[in-house]
Every structure is written in structure tokens, then in C-alpha cells.
Length: 316
Image 1 (spheres, rainbow, N blue to C red):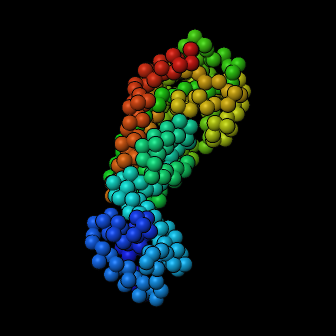
Image 2: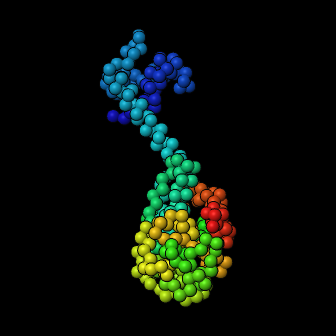
Image 3: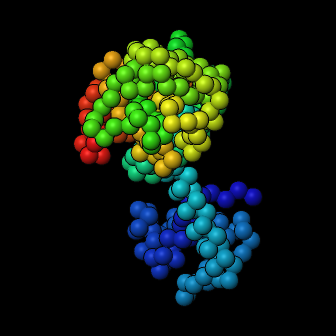
């Protein structure tokens, strides 16, 4: 048996407006066709929904109206969600990101996009760089937030954040200074640079090696650190590692951040990277929210200005 959706709306309108005439007026139709449509519905159901004179719901009609209201509400939600998705204001985005984006960048992007578009759902997961590349190629990821993605013809990218490097070391390291910026090569000369196995993030490791070379000095290398801020355990008081400055506020108390003079050092350039064939209205809305965050937070400032702002905020 086929029941037209409009019949459900007709019956609910009669109940809500307390009669056929008022319901017909609200539905922008005359009473006779409304009455005929409801009689046709009753015929197909094989039972009356209303008693006449007075017009009241039957027991079956009461059940019908209660279920009809729920069904109509669900239909309205389907229509609204479909329109919102088509406009890019709703939908799910699969985001992959690297460790350094986990502490500040991703939370900022999530808060801004979900505030601007409540129907947008961000499924954000941290991966190693190689997994991000695979996920974007396969379509498992819609967009990647990273500074280590390879250049591919099918990838589009947009610079989101310029993140200068800072040093992390033991609080009693002689390189620790409260007087301002230090020179990497001068302050840490002869000290051991600690990192995890480069196979997990070869491009990131290459960036840090470039920074060591640019800073000058001599640095023995030890590659046995466990990845992650919570796991930073330096072997002694004369060892250090390098991280993007955005991770600095989230360091454990067992280590100390040292601000480096960024004028001659490379910076981590965090990008939005996506596949050119998989753009969607929802993804474009997310990009718009991300750009707004980047502008408001001054994420594209020069490394020197970023470090100066950090100094002003921390009093160092």
C-alpha cells in the first residue's frame, strides 16, 4: 500500500488547526479537496482517522498522528541535512595530521569550523607522514595538515602556519637562558641532538638536520627517543631536541623550552594538503574556516615575529 507524504501533513494540519476549514486555509487549499484526500487515506488504511460531528481523532487516528509527526520531523531533517551538505555547511571530513599539529593547530581548526558550521563533523586522526600520503592518495583522507607531505601533481596545498623551531632540553642545561633568544650553534655546541628513528618521519628529520647545519656548531646525534611530548626523556643535561614552537606550551615539566634565534634557521611550514579530484562544498567551507583562524592567530607571520610574540606572552 502506498501512502503519500502529503497525506500525513494533511492529517497533522487538521489536528493542529482544530478543523478542516482552518487546516485547509493553512495549507493554502480549499476544504473539499482536503476532505477528499483524507477520505482516500482512510480508505487505503481501512479505518477512519476522525469521527465527524464533532471532528475528533479515533484511537487509530491518535496512533497515526503520533507516528506521522515523528516521520515528518525525520523527513524535514533529511531535507535540511541534504541542503546543508550541498551548501558545504554540513558533512564529515576525514582529516589526517602529524604530531606537531595535535596540540594547537588541530584543536583551533576544529573549534572554529564546528562553531561556524555546527553540522560539520571533523574525523581527525594523527598519523606518520607516510600514512598521510597513502591516505590522501587512496581517498581515506580528505585533507592533511602537515609540513612533510611530498609534492605530487594530484595534490593541492595551501600554507596554513609558519612554525619556527625551538630547542627542548633539561632545565639545568647551561644553554637555558631567561635573557632572550639564543643562537643554536653557539648555545648547544658539542651537545647531543636526540631524535627518534628517522624512518618514521624522514622529511621532518631532514628539516631538523638542516636547522642544525644552518645554526652551526657540532652536534653528536642519538636516535633512540620515543616519539611524543609526554615521552621526551633526554639522556643527560647536555642533550637536546628540536620541535615546532607551537608545541612549546604543552611540554611536560621535566624539560625546558629554549627560544632560538630564527633568523638563519628553517621553519616548519604547516600546510593544508588535499587531492584535487576530491574537493567538496564541505571541504571548501573547512578551508574558509582554516584561513580565518590562520589570519586571526597570525600564523603566517615571519618566524622572528612569532618568536617575539612568544617572548612577550611569556615574559622571556
